[in-house]
Amino acid sequence: MGKRKKAAKKPQQSRRNVPLDTAFTCLFCHHDKSVTVRLDRKEGIAQLVCRVCDQRYQSKVNHLTEPVDIYSEWIDAADAAQRDEPTSRPAAASSSSRPVAAAASEDSDED
Ligand SMILES: [Zn+2]
Image (cartoon, rainbow, N blue to C red; front, top):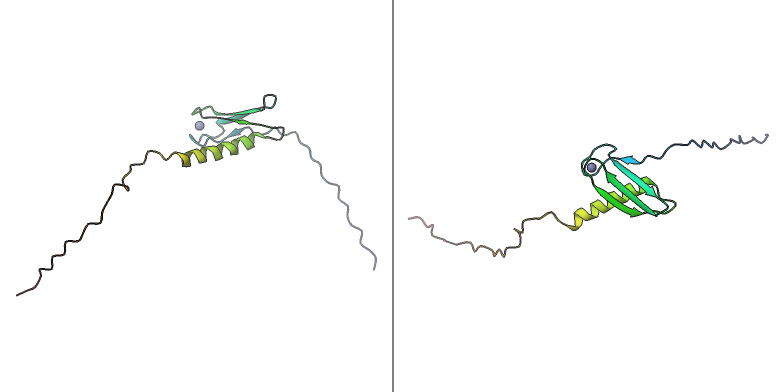
């Protein structure tokens, strides 16, 4: 039995110069591609803005940060903010409600 030679495939290095997607769907107004992320690596700042509803978010960037990272960060932040401040709930549950004593009127004996 002869040894089978392993077919050595060349690793495909397709280095296409695809521009990174920097436009995303807005969390708030749900417009497609209305949110744009700008990375200012020189300043180390990322700015996210929705051109439809004017939502803004700012974060720090490093050399590895991609626009999509800022976008997901924004989602997390918005999510956390929504949990932090409950939208003015009526405080109905906490009005000292004492159990209503069932008026036991056992007055039902028939003649
Ligand atoms: Zn928006």
